[in-house]
Length: 210
Image 1 (cartoon, rainbow, N blue to C red):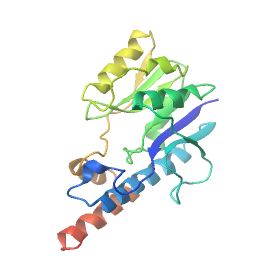
Image 2: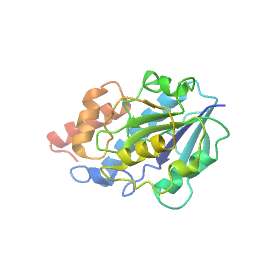
Image 3: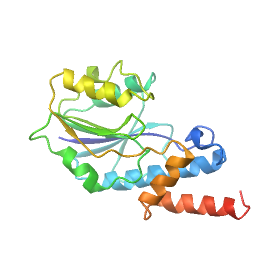
């Protein structure tokens, strides 16, 4: 049974996408976070996994589509929280975050195949990673990996290889962390909710609005 895990934070002002402020206000940053999360969940819902799980810090909102089992994140550092998400899975699992609204089902499809790989790894442009798939969800593969650093992805990938796993690589994607990231991702995925929200907010700013 393959599980698709989406790890996310409730998009609340002052808690979500704080690195977007400035130039965006906390409310605008939260609205961009909500759009990114809605896009991510809509894509994940179209991926033919056996289970779709939202591992959430906070409470669900109207952005949550049907078909997801919602579980709370554990406390602790990000490595601990990701490890706990994998530990709750009975079989192969693919984990993604909410920071890459440009993903499509086609982007994720290879990582649902375990015939030739023990793990899948999606590197992020900032040095982190946006996806991690494990045929055998061993929490020890994540515990102790330093998170939110330029070498996070390299350390996590090395951990997988050191465990003797055959690792398949997914495309390098840009996380939405800064205003520059947001602009690039909106340009890359013009048909998304995220792009529409970004266009609305930047047009309002250019026109002298909030």
